[in-house]
Amino acid sequence: MEYRHIEAREEEGALVITLLTDKFLDDAVCDETAEEIERAQKEPHGLLVVDCWKTTFFSSTIIGKLITADKREVAQGNKNVALCHVDPRIGEVLAITKLNKLFRVVETLEIALRD
Image (cartoon, rainbow, N blue to C red; front, top):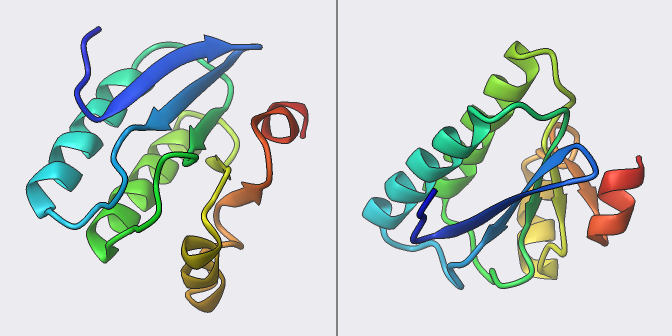
């Protein structure tokens, strides 16, 4: 499938989505990204890992879209979404909002795939 805002691939039975946007500021980009993630989630997988290595800012809109993606994972019987390579500023927001309890926030893709 063709995507503009993500790269999606299967790795070790997991769906790995790399976010290609540096800063999620525009609601239209957030909506398009969410639609792309939803399309990718339709492929069979056991775990969704979102690799944030290119991203330095999350708006509240993209956070809401990731919560929705997590709900789809749980509804499918999968584990909660794992986020890796999270910028420290994004990590602070996730901690303040306690979303680090919802998402599995880990340092690397390897850890996300192993846990």
